[in-house]
Length: 132
Image (tube, rainbow, N blue to C red):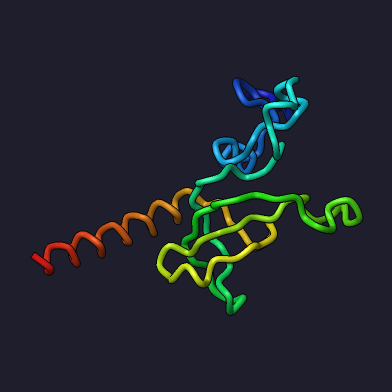
């Protein structure tokens, strides 16, 4: 019988699944690059990434795209919240619904995002076929 150890083995030691999922979505931290001058918002979710964002009813999640990033007004005073806010556009809704949201109102779930994007593409393709 082999003895189990608590130490992770192989590449990616000590990384949680959530950490690994978010790697492609986030800007590197200043400490990871060593050059902070190139990164305007270290640790922030990258611009032009698709995410799920809380809709205006604060109940449902909708497919959205991050258009802009800014420092949160209370970033220096409230250490528990994210230092960034994100300007999102909801892909299935009019532009007048675009808004600034804090990071707690965003979900990074590649599987669900890809599913929603595929569903949206399929609906658009069907509408284009019917129009011809």
